[in-house]
Image (cartoon, rainbow, N blue to C red):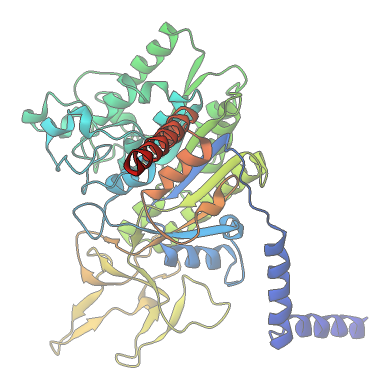
Length: 521
């Protein structure tokens, strides 16, 4: 018996030895898998766009290792998508963007200025007057889809009025104008983002809306120990209850609608009989997945929200467009909480798996996974293979103090871990003085700022389904919306527009021939 166990262990050890033959065999398997893929040039009846807010390439690498508990060969669901490109993330007036400007690029196909949403570069930050000009408004992929008769939805782990989702339905010169309380008196004739979502098109025709942000929708909202008021965000004081307004609108239009506020209520939604669903699960952002109350009275997970959204939207025979944001990746990075950020990517990856399983590979559904911008997270040398990605990389050869594998270029006072000792020398804090593997550990930062700031690097875009092969190089971020439009034949790429463009081309050719004949004779 002992001999059999010994031989088994030896065989396993030999099989795991990463010699030359191991890598040749691995390459053969990858080649065989790649050669099986055929281009899908069909029509995208449905489109699902996943946005990992702040999920740069280093975040993806670290999350992959985190998911595999130190296994560098682990794969995220979207790692296995057959088509990948890179996106340039600068905005109209900054090399390093914010999420409102990048969401406008990703979801409307137009680059714009820092901290504005749903308008083009003619609208400067805080310019209420310019934002009222419809000539400067952008249309999102949800508006294109609605005009084509498709159903639409978005789910997010942030407030539903936050920067990324706001570009889907609002036209605002300032992303923080989520409710009236943060707007200056001179902008009183502009609508806040929450009202635009509930009162205007395309917001009022979005079939599924899920996330946080109750305090932006309902005036004088109160907090609890488990769902406090978000002091970073707007809190409405104008007496409006926009959730009630949403419900009354759906009743007046004779639609079956539901408002849900807990995981249990979401689970009990009759998707077959529900036309419109509004899920508002927190005053501010939803809690991190690690901290989430997973009982019936807590908020749902991103994968549960995604699953329900697909079930409701897929009833439309003309198809749907759904946007899913893993927004707390960015929130965690801003706080310098790398482990929370990686765990949020892992949760978004589970939501991607739900989408793939619900729609099938190479189907009539185009699935895109990307990010709006990077963060300054770095993976430093030289941890051993199989080491925890939230562990130590080694000791500095200069100060002899250990350092973690993950660090940030910028960070707040909790991450800027330098002190001056009795010899008046700057000393870096030893990570061994804290639990550096915990969710609440702030990775060390090189430069003290108010928070960890965005990075300006390119982000990856992963795609599978109809026209996914259109992502094949380094693209402008605006390209994503145009691929969605082209693949689904919506917006500027609708059949009608294509027909007119073809007719114009034929007319131009005819005129050209006539001119040649006239010149000859």
